[in-house]
Length: 436
Image (cartoon, one colour):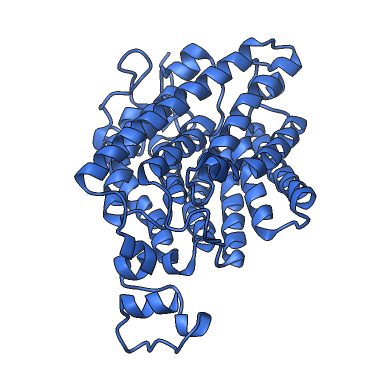
């Protein structure tokens, strides 16, 4: 009897196509979220750092990234092979589970894109755009790709040997971006005026819009990771919604008690913190666990974002406080709340699994954070020596929009002070410098 060749399921394929589009939308959403949080003079630069990541990561992923992450393990669970470099062998009839392999590769590509873009928030307002163009593809190959293989690749040591759990990317997405953001902002040093100037978000409606697009896309991010239109995807979808809500409420509760004012920035940040934390655990914990994970992230991250002032590192847009801390919370709490009804077997401490699952989650977090931080720090130092990583003091003071991109996001004569700037007259650095 001849076994039928594996074929793609149309329902699963349709859902993953939609999920892939949702995750890709998260990067423009992130651009708006970050863009609203910076000052007017660097809005476009912030948007560009996210948008250009789409192009840079796509090219390097298709050339080698996918194969190194998801190719056959070369030994030791550390890296995949190059048999799919240039997407070789991934024709329309190639199937990964119940979906076309080329679709699976594209879905994973969208994860790689937003992970690189996330780092930009830690180094906003002061990074050379030319250096960023080099950093993103190199970082993707050196940090994101190996960690992805460890967690999701065939034979990857974190999943297959250690037995740690990560459903949708707490380790390769949230912790790598957060630890790398910390490393890069230490290499760059603080912004001019850090801890002296207010540096308030210039457009909170843009921040809320960006957070809403991120939340919308996160359903594809988490529920899509089930790789099928099934009950696990539905449970991950609900857990994602629930954790975003409790994260938002937890952050606002802290703000009300600490500062006396619940803020729109706090609402957006709290929702994102809850979504970050539920990312690794959405397919491993029950609904009650998801509510607790989101609440814990909202509360803890609301305090963590202020650590930069005490520890003197300038994480411009709180990538460390939200993504690193939130990713750690969500990944570690799997060791407490993992439910066999979701995992199909593995259980956390609170469901009778003992301390071993918690230990595995802690070890995975420690190794990934240390690897991402150390490699990024070394890469940042190397690029700083070779190209110069930081924009000049004059560029930073005037604003990167005008000095790097020769554009401004707004008519400063209307939104700022002084006479309107003519649309027909060329903008100069001195004009914007006096009006900003």
